[in-house]
Length: 589
Image (cartoon, rainbow, N blue to C red; front, top):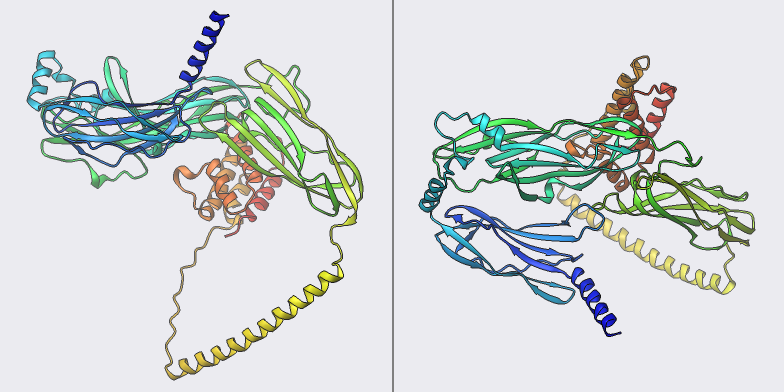
């Protein structure tokens, strides 16, 4: 009995230890040279919400810039822990051994303090001596020796990679693509072309603005690694699809002296300036372009055997529920049926369930909302469909069970689940009821009072108008009207005219022109440019302007299928263009 009690105590201690929030200070382990910049990181792990970190005074160091804050997870796996990183960039001023105190943060009412750390600062002379003793003078990548090939050195010390977690998957199963910039040089890098993810629905996980940077060792050398972008890609259909290269333009500064400060990199998107090159005494600047390799993903179709007849592409693990917001309604009173799908999978591709409304009830298209955790793979969260409906026939109704069939790639099996049927009572009274006599008298009295106040207001307003007219007539002023520039957007007919001319052409050419026409029409109207021209941002902008993005996204995905697959699409192209005209025509100037 005593032994079981001890084991229980140990298990509980292990559980609380694993769930504990940690707060630590991280600095470089190697010595820092005077004039060199380095980073101090205060990392909180295991806390969902972290307030601002109170940093100590950095005596003996210069503060290079304001702190950079990153909120994310330790990895993109489903068991990832929340991670909060506050990073300060400091500059070493003079040699010595310094203690950098820990920072303070309050989490759930408890004050936490990170550990103190020690940083050693050495002079440039001592750094040079150590390099010569260790035979490492040539390891300073930012140093360009006389006669050395600058571009060869850039190729060895500055490059970009794309890493994918798999190259084969099922339709609807996510592929994680991570774009990283590796550098040991003093450089400015600008993303001039983002990759095209044709054939996929894209969910961003990490972007350039998150400023995620780590240090990795390759071939015995340490590289500063910037995670430029990380995305989840959900295939729309089976086939071979290619992730286009990401292209980056770089300006690299080399030093002509063997001792140089620690290299730093700046990564931007679309703001490269030829007049803003890094220059300085004893330096040389070179420009170069780098890019990732194209990556081919083999997408397998969902298995045909045992595929349910109502399978509509849902891939992952889900649950479904259905409720009516009010189970008793009057005649012609609007009601709502809410269907909620929870779980993990391709949420952006989940379509609205088909409702078989009973005779006597008229249903309408649903309003759709989605809440997912972008850090988990596959996406984890909920998607809600809120259907409105009315009925003019009193009686008891039963809304049938709503089914959902999905494919689980972990088990390679299909599963069909269903929400329970919902009961509904439509009363005999109409929604519009007669007003009781007492309420009617009270209403008439309040109306009379309001009418008296309105009449008094009209008299006062007329007097003010006469007074203003008399004053302005005494001193007439010249009224200057400022003409506002008129913005003229291309019409639907203008952008679609080239597509009509290509109806007899090959499918891929036709769909490419249709896709270009759609973006040409909507980009200026929704203020989209550059990397914002993707379906995710488009959907957000349309929702902000109270437009439904469903139809337009379907057309764009249809065009992508025609452009990037070899399947011949037997359809009426003129009918498709008429549909595009209708969809675009709803987006007003």
